[in-house]
Length: 461
Image (tube, rainbow, N blue to C red; front, side):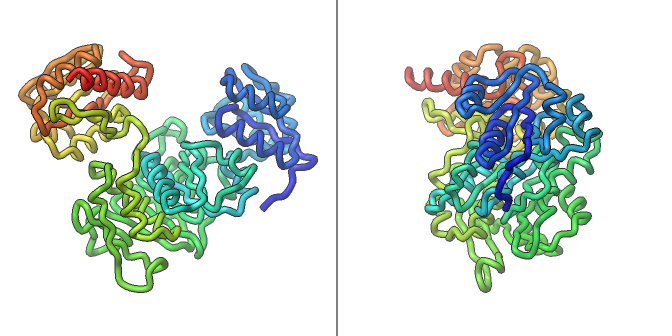
């Protein structure tokens, strides 16, 4: 663990949560700190830097200032092709992530979680399970507060970190106690020369420093992980999980039923297996069973008991807009899954809800292929309400599949109509399968407006 930055200049590129946290930690450890942001600083971050007396600039990168750094902490959002990064690489200055900087100054254990989908839910659930068990635990990375800023006081025994591939690209020395990899599907390939292999190897950087005292929890059902992990040789404790046990590949965790997870963790219990019930969990859907398997395994490895896990599960509240129950009107439940901005996410939602559905979908189509949704829609959907500016493609695919298709450009009208059409026991599901930018600022705005419309109608019912 490093001790001092005396005599060293640290430049932070980017002034978001992670960048400002890195600047504050570096200053606390004696570095000469300068923050440079090509855009505008958010008021709360500007105030933090001013209060700490840290020099900064916005709207530009002063090349002489940046290139005089001993070391640079780079925001995950800055691509390598940016002119400032080309200049930095040419000069040969060391570039690290906020995660690496923070890990130098803490002896706390950590659970690092990555994956294309599900990492936020898995991270929040893992944190919840440790917190409910009485652990002194911090939440950081892509959720919660800056890891680096929390390390200034360093009050926690554990940290649970959600880590993106962009963060991992500049992470070299960080060593999680438990590494978790949920899945790898094509995403952000423009940052990886349109190579799925390069993107996969970026995710697998999380395992680069693991040793015999570490644990690697990963999804054995994911073909790309199985394929790419073979090329990463680490001496660690592999703990694969699966939805259903494979005879050819025994896994450390699998489901014996929809609500029972069987664990065989040789480093946690001495012999045999143990079972964890997720029957009282509020999370629904096949993908959330995978998320729960990973979080429960991580919590058990960290020492949380089965009883503590089963007690904590019903009290978990997921991040907003992810299969989030938002109300009930005349016996029909309304679920906000506005985060489902692609077909794959909508598939998980349609598959996970077991009740008859009034499905609200639509928005900005990203070249979607809806064919995988057709069997689920045929089996489950009573009415599709298209909520978008251009619904032609949705109508074309689903008018022959579901009994009734309607459309609107008003979220309140969509909710009102869904309530009229729903019977007691039905679910009204907002799972758009599309981006939100035709009618809304972003998926959060879409989800908030949906939830608000439900609350207003519920109050009148």
